[in-house]
Length: 264
Ligand code: PEP
Image 1 (cartoon, helix red, strand yellow):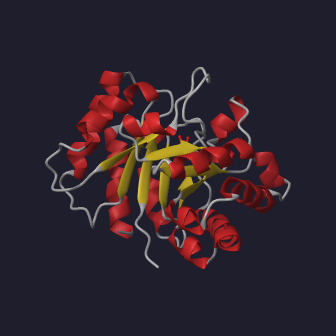
Image 2: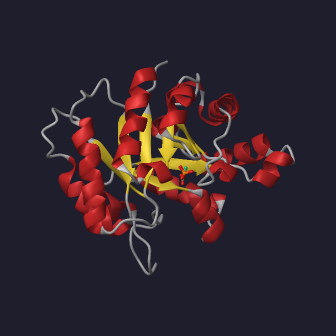
């Protein structure tokens, strides 16, 4: 089964609106030279304050149908109400998003997000017609204690609980070993592929083989232009969630270019 690769940039809490727009334009001017079948699905996740800024320029690039999709970095599961500081799926959609990242390890670690909250967010995103990018990953301690597979499997089972097979098939998972995020240490590609295969087997167990074949599972953790070819050459890695290297047009565009050498 061939799955269209995704290269997603997570800008985290960086860039003012003007800077976000400039970076977005730099990516847009690169992708416009490629046609849709060649190009991976490109997704950019700016801060909430820049969502409208980048969405307003995403579709007018005259690139013959190529589109850069926009993602929010988080959302609440309720439609509206007294949840100070949060945004709903409908608000993200209204700001031009097609995807929403949930369960990033930074949200789990610094904002105490639980598996149950991530499951509610995934359901709300799918009900709202958007696509969740569900992050999972182990700490160094868990890896050293031999608990990687058990931990990730339990995160995935919880995140997908009660979601239909059709909706699971549309979703995206990002496997991001926490010790590899922002550290410059990339997980060995064969090992990342092994964990991603294990995630696919958990998806098969909870949602069936069609969903397991269709769901796109990305690797994240210090992805760079120099690592992406080897990562994309693996059987089960369907793309990358990129943090640091997505903050410069040159490096992000090179990641897209190197992905096209291997895999689209
Ligand atoms: C991330 O935050 O999702 C990430 C993978 O960051 P980096 O690429 O900087 O490790």
